[in-house]
Length: 329
Image (cartoon, rainbow, N blue to C red; front, side, top):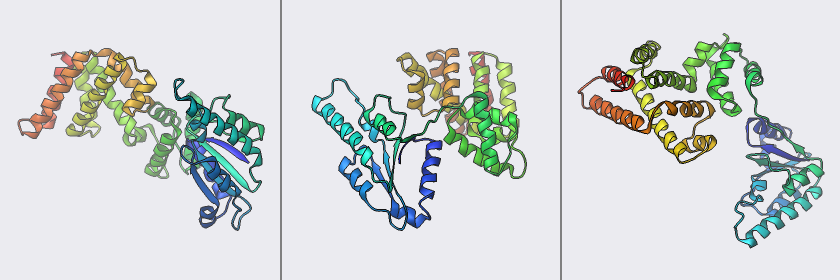
């Protein structure tokens, strides 16, 4: 059987299921071959497929990112390289119907290949299994979170699942890690919204976003109230200063990238941000000019210097900073 899986949580679980079918860990080690599709040759793939299973009915050959290697990258690239990719793609497509029946080949790709990819079409023609990983949204994503928590032996309130989805977004790998952490934290109890806010890093970031929202609105009273809420929730002044500094720095970088014409997705990749923090930052930079962000960053550095030199305390520095930033002084 030929498989095409995406390199995401669902793809990883399907690959793990295929490995488990081979038997215990020792047999898996003997009957699984992993190849780098960006580097290994077709001959190496054919040799791996042709090997006989050892004390098992089947063996598994995993090939990562080979289909991506066959995609044209640059229209003006060297014609000989383009010809070489085309020849490799055709040779691979021609070989797939001849994979021994005792071998399962799993192609793992970062994204779904275009329908015109010759190897993709060859996988379809031999009856290969092509995994579809559609992005979950809204109620479907919240339903998935609830089911995932049950699968891990826990329970999560609907409202908590909704908040978790809002903070983390649709990245199932990240969600799975956060659900694991929350279920362990809650124990026999149901995971609540309060648990999510306490344990999930994105939720803590959201609290900082709320403070920056009030600063951006030039509402010093609301900003101070928000600051008091964060302090009452156990946020240490020094930690809050670090988080505010990080957010202002990210906003500065996002502002510059947006001005350079970079897309939402490109900015997220460049700043290594997931969907929720990326979208919040892109919303917030509309409320600040580049000059305001630069001035805020300078004040944060000055506050840090004052704390380290003993001229002030983190709490006093934080209070003054929030008032100054929110008043536009």
